[in-house]
Image (cartoon, rainbow, N blue to C red; front, side, top):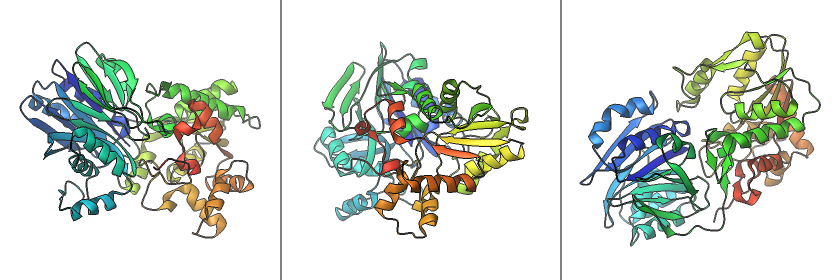
Length: 473
C-alpha cells in the first residue's frame, strides 16, 4: 500500500509532517519522501527505506526545509515520490496512494501526445509522475484532478501541494482513506487517523469517495462533492490498518476483536489450551477469539523487532522469506505438548505460514489449529498491491485450485465454487491446504462474518480478493 500526511499551518509545520509521515511507516517499506513550500520555492527529499527507517533517513535533513508552514510526506511500497512538476497550472508537488491498472495504456496515450517522462527509478514509468502529468492537462487543478481520476483504472488517492494550499482528493470509489484533522493553527490530511492524536490534532471527518477539498490554514473548502458509490478496501481492517486507527468511524482493533469472536463461535469442535496471534496483525483477531471462546491468550511466538523490520520489506521474495523466518522467536515455555489455536490475517503465498508451522512443530506443539481472519485470497487485487504479483499463481490459493482442477484454465464458475464456503470444493481446497501446511485443522473466515465484523454494508466494501466483486466504472 502506501500512506501520506499533509499539513497547512500558521506556524512552521516541518516537524508535524515529519512525525505524521513516520506514523504511516506500517503502510510502506520501499521509498519515502517529503515536499514543502517555504514561501519562495518547493523543497523536496526522497530516500530508499529498503535498508533503514524513515526517521533515520530524514531526521538530519529537517533543517533544510526551514520554517515552512505547508508540506506533505509519503511512505510508499512503490515508486519515488513526491513528484514536483511545472505546468500551465503553475508548480505543484504530488503524492499518491495508488495502483494504476492501465498505466501502460495511459503512458502510451501521453507519449502519442508528445509528453515525456523521466526515469526516476527502476527504468519504469513512475505512477505518481503519470498522475502529475494528467493533472496538468486540466484547465484548473480541480479539472486536472478529476481528469486524472476519470482516466485511471484501479485506484488513486492523492495530495497536491501548491504555493497556496494543499488539495486532497480521495479515490473515486473511496478504496483508500483520507482523514482530515485540525488544531488551532491549521489543518492536516492523512491516510491514518492514528497519526493525529500525538501531534495535537483532532479528527474532523473522512473525505467521501471522489471528494476533492482545498486545505489552507483557515479551513477546508469542498472543491468537488463526494460521489455516491463507495467501496472501501476491507483489508484496512483485516491487515493494513494500525490498531488505533479508525476508518469510516470504525476502529481497526475493535473490528478485529469482532472478527476473531465470529471465528470462535463457529469453532465448537476443538478444545485448544489457549489462543495466539501470528504477530502483529493476527493479535487483535486472536484476542477477540480468546475472549469469545473463554480460553487464555498467550504468545508462543515473539517478534524480535530491533533489527528486523516488516517481513515484506525486501522486494526480493527470497529475502522477504528470510526476514520473516529470522524475526519470529518461538517461546518453548508455551509450545511443548500444547494444543494451540492461531489467528493470522491472511494467507498470500503460503511460504511464511509454512515456515512458522514447522517452527512450532519443532518446538513441540502437539496440535496446531490455524484460523485465518479473512476468506481465501482467490482473485489478485486490481486496486492495491496486497495480493498482486507478477503471476496469479503466486497466490497460494490459486495454486491449490489449479492443482485440484488439473488445469491453468480456471473458469469463473470453478473459482466461484471454491470461493463459496458452503460448496464441497471449498472444503476440499481447505483440506488440501491443511495437509500441505502440516496443520491439525484450518479454517478461513466467512465473508458474511467478516462484513459483519467490519460493520459497513457489503456494497460499501471492496471484497474483490475473495469474491471478485468490485466497482470498476
